[in-house]
Length: 128
Image 1: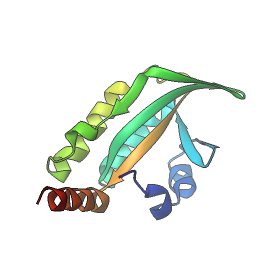
Image 2 (image 1 turned 60 degrees about the vertical axis):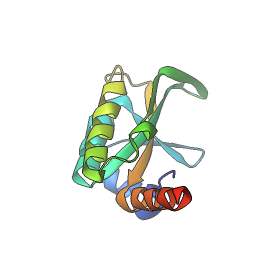
Image 3 (image 1 turned 180 degrees about the vertical axis):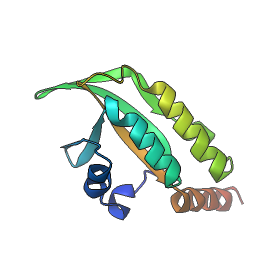
Image 4 (image 1 turned 45 degrees about the vertical axis):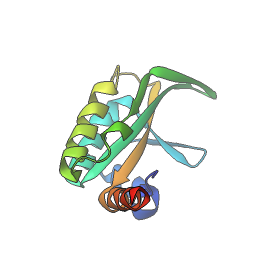
């Protein structure tokens, strides 16, 4: 169920237009803490849920996972889509720490409505 938002959106163009910095590492985008609020607004305006976040402190070539900034919204799966989007964005917003840091980066797992619905349909088939 990991989102394919990267295939559907030109993240560099979208986020450049909104002046959001992306640090690309290992084919994944990482966002600086100070830009997270803009990402939440982007998701809200584009009907995109945030299924998860992992935080990292990145300094040069050194990485350190921030275990207190792991967010997982998978327990919310099954509620109506609009409510899911609102709750996941709100939960993600509360998991971000020290938004003024230029060393803290976040990797997001996004979820789109069609992927969510496909997952729920498959889940129902598996139950029956």
